[in-house]
Length: 198
Image 1 (cartoon, one colour):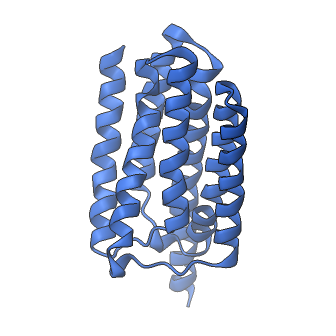
Image 2 (cartoon, one colour; image 1 turned 45 degrees about the vertical axis):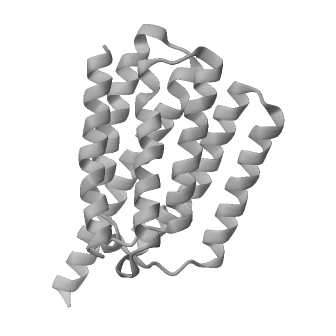
């Protein structure tokens, strides 16, 4: 089963490298608040899961879902070509996400940590979801496609040791990745059709 998870993690790194290259080239403009918090939340969930249930292959996709965004965030910080203007809603979502992380720290309960890391990650995702809806060409679906493969392998691996701690964040990530792929592809198609009509 661990080979399946390793395959998923390698897929995440492979697809993530395309997003990193697109960021370096300025073809995508990551929302820095989203990507920073996308790095923090999964890594917290990863360490909280280890605290709750010990190290398990099923949580490797969660680690990768934090590590790759960390690389994207660092790349976007130093590349002016990938600049994206932050708006008040971005800062508000970042603030709410940080509050959720603080609540996790105060509770020091592994299950609550996972719940609040999901809340934090979902709120942090809102700026990128809105950006993908309004400006789908500022994103690329390939990273999220890799996330789908990675999280599915994590869910399959978790069947050997099924628990809320092992699967909650992974299932959330799967739903998020599917949503972003659909939004980006659908909105690109809609905008392309509008231009064709004009």
